Picture 1: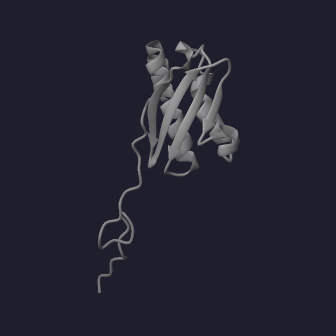
Picture 2: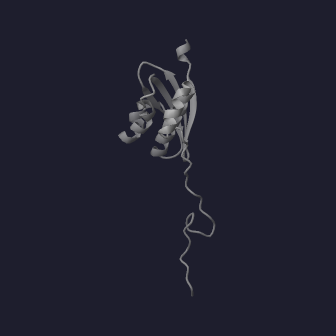
Length: 132
């Protein structure tokens, strides 16, 4: 019964939020919004991004991963899932913190779209200035 306990973490990127639960298992499996990761993400590149934390040489244990992800686009969702998985792995085994941090997997990417300001066409683009 001790094996059924899970570790939960949250990953974020832009406006995407991923609630990640990892459970020890015989092999790595990632389920995103009730679909396998390869089926949920349209591109093989996004699936590789999601599985990146498990490919690290310091991660020795295999996990079953369940993710609920909302908001953002596919790339932001994939990055949010990767961030959440990395944080959950560190909660499980604290010695993984240094190598995962060195690879940038624990860093929350703070870049988001800047808001449009009044009087401008976009966030910074103004109307063309005319002398006369």
